[in-house]
Length: 318
Image 1 (cartoon, helix red, strand yellow):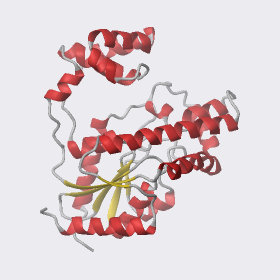
Image 2 (cartoon, rainbow, N blue to C red):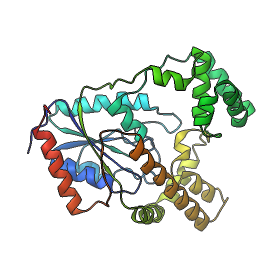
Image 3 (cartoon, rainbow, N blue to C red):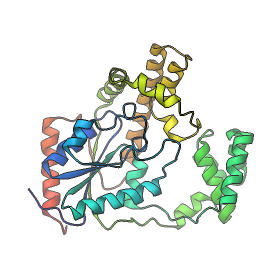
Image 4 (spheres, helix red, strand yellow):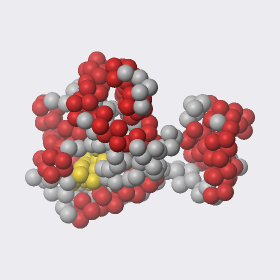
């Protein structure tokens, strides 16, 4: 087995239901690896079935990090995740293990590999004022304000994306400049001095959509209804990210008697397919220096990627 040097990281990404988790598990077994989560929903406690977290058997087989570590009432940003991930990568290196970062949250992976713009800190009074206005006036009013004050960011964001609309207004009020302008001016710098071998598993669209449709039924078989019934008792703010995880809104509607299980299934499957399509677009257009494998995960793809990882590990200075 090739020796892991102190600056090598493997990234295995892809849309939901693509088979990336199986590939990461196989690669970690083959190369003495540690799997580090790069999925923005799997980081939260309380919904392991709905978010397709690793099984206890998989966790016993290979070390897994950053899964189910945050309270679902909290919000994990890309910058905070990056700090956690860098710490886990350095721990893996110290143990002579290969860090394998895997997940479908493209922004997290882009932040790790390419860095994130270090924007000025937002004062608490500005953040609290804007969030309070959002709660009182609604997202439509904040979006109209953003369009008037910062047309470029207004054009970039979706009208109901409360979190990003608030962020754009906070930056504008704090700095007097558009977030778009600051992102152009402040060049991102990776927090980690490392070499990355990044692979994206992206099956053909028909295969991917079929797997997305199967996802809901598998969740139900594994106990998702019972999981969401318990999750509903937390009475979380509907705006927190964990409440928007794939399948959560639909199953919450079902357990609260707002719809039938068939209706929840249809809606969850549709939302999962749409989300997978957006993920594919992101990975194709937003992340550089990544190898995309336009096929479903199979033994032949596994062997191909093994060879590429082996070559990567044997050429530490390239």
